[in-house]
Image (tube, rainbow, N blue to C red; front, side, top):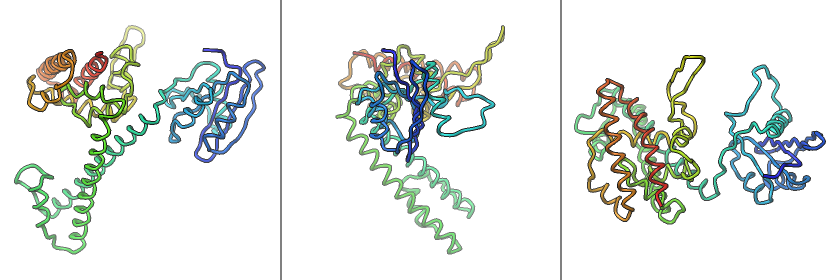
Length: 360
């Protein structure tokens, strides 16, 4: 990597960008203001004395500016906001100060870069997150309706909730007050609309995955128990290229599945997991880890997912079943809470995901 002649710190907003430009040779610092248009900000950086290195914080404006700078031959660091050092006594925050802070940290090499996904990868991630947002909305709406019915003394005791039978039972209920009845009808209609939206998004994910760059990775992941098409697509969208992690421990740390640590002198204390990185990917892995409570077996559905996959991937998946079931058995014998066991199993499952996606 060539030493940069010009360093640029960009404080990026939707309607404007403030740039702090530092000449690495003379130490001269200048400020410029441009509109929030990606092309205008990239043109400013590209027109400075080369080589140029720019940096800005990851945020709601996305990665379009980073991709445009790369296209124009400008090296760009998209910094992780949570790892930007800030003085505890600093009580003044302006766009110019933020841009200057970034450029000086860039000069000192103190910025932690996040990976910039490609446009297609970002589109898949948006689709997966849209489905997850609808799923959460559906869960909340169902809770509101069920609690409304419970307050009026209606309980469903004929099987699991939110099946066709349960939905038919809800349709027969007449609440005593018109306002309550209107509330129930509105909630039931919202649930139907959200179910339709969720199913439509899931069909879109399933349809695009076979022709996407993640078809091979998703196929490998689907060999694992508890990971089917939607979970595999979610992991691929959130993690991207598994091969960028040299060891499985790095992927575990990236997903926030490793414990916090406080070590001083002779004392070493481990706490709860760090919960850094993608919460969506972490939730998918924890949900999949619950499947390993049961004894190892290969059912009809899992056998179908193994079809066409290499024997090495099937062997890794079987090893995962045996090891993670032992983890459940061992920790349950020690009277650990099942939620804690699920997180521990998810951490080990992450290592198997890393291994199975790296099979040639």
